[in-house]
Each structure stands twice: as structure tokens, then as C-alpha cells.
Length: 500
Ligand SMILES: Nc1ncnc2c1ncn2[C@@H]1O[C@H](COP(=O)(O)OP(=O)(O)OP(=O)(O)O)[C@@H](O)[C@H]1O
Ligand SMILES: [Mg+2]
Image (cartoon, rainbow, N blue to C red; front, side):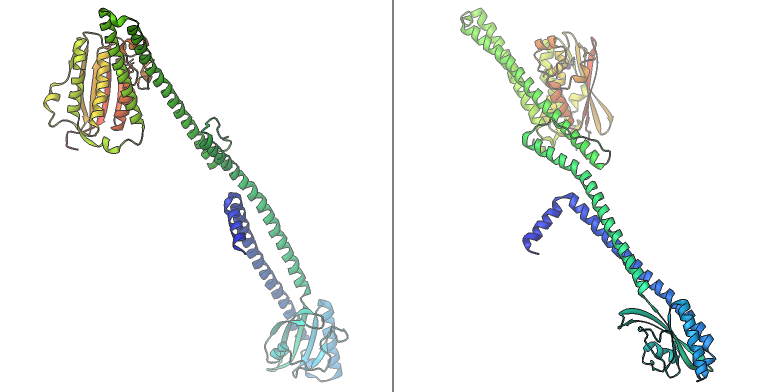
């Protein structure tokens, strides 16, 4: 086979699951059936021949008993009796019978006139191997092709014993045509069965391969479409409960997830643009007003500049939050940045310091346990990013101060449920969070009380950032809140007092 043809055959075979299944099945089944048929034919042949041999042997023994006495007499009447016994038996059972004397000369033959006759009276046939063997006292069995008629014959030669010596031989023969014909018929039947099985196998394999192939092809087509166009609008049909069905289901789940991510991404961009637009437009209108003459008026100038400063600050915070959240989202952020030794007590104290002035300006009592300050040396230790953790606690403390009216209380406490975890509780006596808002407060851009928050100026990213930072430290964050009474945020982090 030329290399080109070989490559083509290989390519064709391995490019399709159906071809591989089909030809593997076909090969296995054909080999198995051929082996079984061969074994069956060999067994049938040997059983049939053994059967015939037994019949011929019985015939030979019976004739030997019958002519035993006459064999000793070399008279015409004895020969006639032998001949008639031979003829009678031969016509009765449909075999050819030859009787020879101890010298190997033919005494009687059942087919002397027949043109298929082998032997005629008086002829010495001791050269025939079976006669030779029988004259030596052995029961001989041979199969021989008779050249004249081109037929196969089975011969059994039986020695007739008389007073310790071989007095003659009875040879009974039978044509094997019938057995051979039966074997040929069986062989044809076997071949037909093999062919039919092969056809059925091909049909079943094709059907099976098509069943497996179709959904796989659909899947790869859809995957290709998605990778080229990014269109996530189609799902795969799932009509089966087998592994292929499961694969289709997982594929659809993956599409669903991608869709959700895409939706979140677009929502994020829309929200971010909107949030960025608001202060930008406000800055624009303040600048417009100032240019229109307000800048000339000393009383207005101060007011406008103050609001400009606020707007710029809000814009700066928003941009910082957006950068932070996109950094937290990107899986490429350097893993080393999250593996520093962190002293949690120090992080908490610095976070409290950051909100202290805001709290006192609102006349809010900000309390921390005394031991926190005195235990920086042997504080809670963990691996992570101190700046980010501080950011997370500033967000929580900032919210607590922000959403608590003047005169309220905000407290930070720590708890150690076991020696591998630390719980930080941030409690306030503020407005609390409405039940319908609670499940959403960690979502990006989600703000609870919209009117109140507009004044407060938040963008709704603070808790989302906090959540991501805590998750990055393998921690959890929970919230309990009662409207009008206050809220408690509980951050649980893996940390211990031993040096990590
Ligand atoms: N301690 C709290 N008391 C009452 N409501 C709170 C408290 N903390 C959070 N919330 C509610 O959860 C919402 C989401 O908080 P988050 O910190 O994410 O956003 P924000 O404070 O509105 O804006 P910013 O992005 O500036 O933090 C808030 O808008 C507020 O309604
Ligand atoms: Mg906030």
C-alpha cells in the first residue's frame, strides 16, 4: 500500500468515532464467529467419521463371525457362501465389502461387476495398507481417494482370527460423499450466519456510532461557534440520560455560567460608567456656574470650591474602588502579595484610627477592647495582605460610622472560637438594614436606602470589595441587623496567636 493511501485510510479511520467503533466490532465478531465455525466444523467432521467407523467395524465383525467357518475351506461352495453373505450384507447396509484370504487374495467382493469395483476375485491386494495391517492382526482404518471416481472412501479392515493366526481380512468401505456434502452444507450455513451477523453488526454499530456522534458533533459545532462569535444564545438539546446527556448538561451549565458572567460584566460596566458620569457631570455644572460669574462672587466661590473638592474626592474614591475590584477579580494578581505575615491587631488598630476623626465629627463613640492596643506584640497572626485587610475593616467601620446617626455607638470586638480562628465583630447602633436589602448588600453597586445613600455619597462597592478581600484570606463574613437598632458584621478569619 502506498504511503499516501495508508495515510488516507488511517486518517479516515481515526477521524471518526463511528468508523473506529464499527470496524473494531466487525473485526472482533468476525474473528470470533470464524473461530467458532472452524471448531464446529472440525468437531462435526470427526464425530461423523467416528460414527461411520463404528458402523463399519460392527459390520466387519458380524461378517467375520458369519464366514469364519467357510474361510478354512478352499472349495467353490465355501467361496460361494462367502460371496452371498458379502452381497447380502453389502446391499442391506449400503457399503462395499471385500474378503481376502491370509495371502491377501480376494475371495469375495461386493462390487465385482460394478465399474467402480476395485478388486476382482483372485487379485492380491495385500499392497493396500489397511489389508497389510489387518493381515498383521491390527484393525486398520484409512481414508483414501479413489482416483478413478475421484471420491473419498473410508475403509475399516478387520482381521479374522482362527486358532491364533490371521485367517483372512474383512474390509468394509463407505463413500464419504454424504458426510462431505453435509459438511459443505454446514460450512455454507456458517458463512451465511457470519455474513448476516456482520451485516447486523454494521447496522447496529452505525446506529450506535451515529447516536454517540451526533451530540458530540453538535457540541463541537456549538463550541466552535461560541469561540468564533462569542454568541452565548444557544443551548444544546438534552434528551438523554446517559453520559452523553450528562456531558450536554454540563456544557449547557457552562454556557449558562458564561452568560451570567457576561451579564455581570456588562452590568458592572454600565454601573461603573453611570457612577463615573454623575460626579463628572456635577463637576461640569459647578465649573460652568463658576465660569458664568460665580467665581467672581467671594461668598459663592468658597461654596462652589468646597463642593468641587467633595465631588473630586468622591470621583477619586470611586476610581480607587473600581481599580481595586478589578484587581481583586483578575486571577493574574501576584500570589506573593497575599502571602505576607500579617499582625491582625495592628491592622485593626490602624483601621480604627482611620475612622476615628469621622466618628468624633459625628459625635459617635468608637470603642475597641483595651487589650487590643496592648497586645500588638503577640497579636493574632495570619498570612495575607495587611493593606487589603485594613481596607476591608475600614469599609466596615466606615459604614458603621456612616450609617449611624450622631450620638450613636460603634464598637469593635474580637473573639477566638478556637485557637485557629478569630472573629472580629463590628457593631453599631445605627439605622440597621432592611430585610429585603440584606441578601444584596455584598453585591456590587448595591445601595440600601437609595435616598439616604445619595447624600452619604457611597457607590455601593465597599462591601463587595470587603467580601472579596475576606474570601481571599479564606475567611467568611456574616451580618445581622435590625432596622432602627443597629447592625453587626462578623468577620471570621483563620488566624492564631502563634507565629505562622
Ligand atoms: N453598618 C451599616 N448599617 C446600615 N446599613 C449598612 C451598613 N453597612 C452597609 N449598609 C448598607 O449596605 C449598602 C452597601 O454597603 P457598601 O459599603 O457596599 O456601599 P456604600 O456604603 O453604599 O458605598 P461605598 O461604596 O462608598 O462603601 C449600603 O448602601 C447600606 O445601605
Ligand atoms: Mg460603604
